[in-house]
Amino acid sequence: MKIDGVSVKVGNVLDYKNKLWSVTKTQHVKPGKGGAFNQVEMKCLTDGTKLNERFRSDEKVEKVRLDQKDYQYLYEEGDSLVFMDTENYEQLSMTKAFMDEDRVKFLQDSMIVTVESYEGTPIGVTLPQHVTLTITEADPVVKGQTAASSYKPAILENGVRVLVPPFIASGERIVVDTNELTYVERAKSA
Image (cartoon, rainbow, N blue to C red; front, side, top):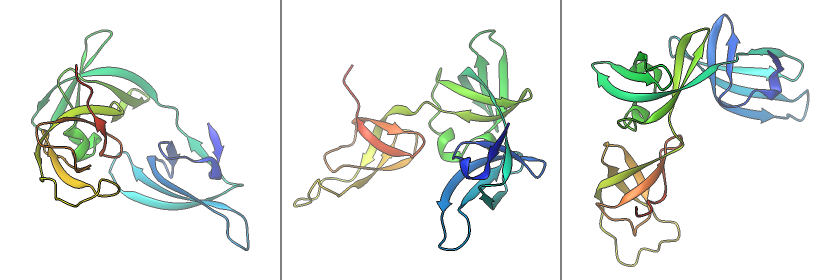
């Protein structure tokens, strides 16, 4: 499907220069002279290289339509991640390179993820928006520190480091945004 160059958004997958590219950043620029354009940062889905391109409003780019299907995460095997199709129970093995290193750490047993594929070939894994994890290590509260804009570092049970408000202590369960790798809120008690 052809779209205008200024319509490209983060998350789009483009067929550009005979490769598949995932759009990671966009910035719409309207200079004083000349026409507006979209400054786009992309990452190649096959080899991981990055590319910065400038698309003008009159340019057309090919947006790829991806198939999305839910899979259940089963286990890690060496350099591969094993998932199971929730409909027919077939297993799918993908290398860890399909996911950012920090996001791999958020995979939990039996977690339902979305696997995106293009013409039958898996090209990416999308985690749930939020996951709940326990803090294993957090700095103590510093007296006199206001809660308004100060955050302190904390380490989650999966080893990922996030910033949390000062009232969060070690051992507490929190909700983390898997896209931004940031604290969202305290986990609700079950």
